Image 1 (cartoon, rainbow, N blue to C red):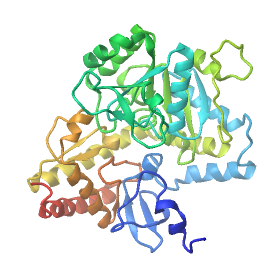
Image 2 (image 1 turned 90 degrees about the vertical axis):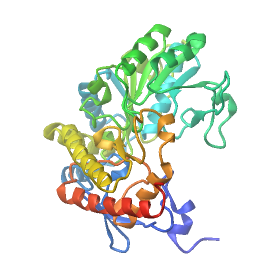
Image 3 (image 1 turned 45 degrees about the horizontal axis):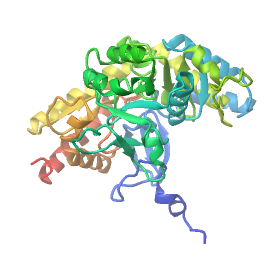
Image 4 (image 1 turned 90 degrees about the horizontal axis):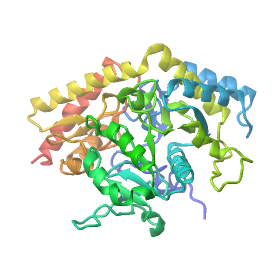
Length: 427
């Protein structure tokens, strides 16, 4: 039986993990700059920005023009194309680790393929991720730390149904920002580790001084590849991403979000000798890697990505996003202080996260001890007041955000803080 409305036909009336509660749910009709409008004509200030890709704002004229120009020349070829070659060259120029590039369709695919490449290159099977990290939707990414206080504390278990337990056995979960703890954890299994994968800024947790450098030394010492998940940080913290900002070069990195300018595009970039394992027809030495997809290197996505990176380079967008984020964070802290609410923002200014509690908050364990209920409710109250956020998650900046959008946000935030205080969620 067919349903009469699209909302019912769309499973759960959501596209993935992000689903607003029914009390504030709506459907987006269009976006421009830092604003979106729903199907009833209501305007919202957008601090989700497509979960990060829209660093230039919605419908940026140069990105729109690039997409239209390419669409008139063809939307897909399933073959090497001019725009894909140009974007690969741009990535190799900007990203420190990038000697070579292979495209895919989203950030989850990029982290998945990076790990497959590492296992093939090293001829090892285990990977290391950090507690609380998000590396996408594939089976190796959807592993969480097993609770308990025994010797097997760092075993992983699936976060989703449908993942074979055999995969969990190949994933080791280490403590973020604890290089000594990570080193001790890996010592007994060092010769089994293919890759250490890490977000340079894990969610809202900045890396402790020396942590990323320590991972570089550790990976080299045990013969594993160091993989940076730069899906969020790439081209946002700096033109060369987190690896440029923190001065640590990984063997491979996963890129996405900004790379495609709002279209479905991602990539694995890094050492040429590793990425060449994907070349069809290479010698059969047991290390050839399948990395393919119908829409890999799609020219529309590459055209949008090139136009986006043009603006990012020309206008110094990473510095702009940082300054806008610092200004918003200071305004939020001032509002909370006036209401005597324990509050801080964590993470990089360009994608900071709101916390109700006290610091330091530098890993998943510390974050779990903050008032997560208040943070989520705060987000819901913001949506109710015309500010789109993912409740309890990151706030993304774009160059389209200005004093007027920040002012509207801070007015809504002050009232939202007052509301959750009056609801007794801060006791």
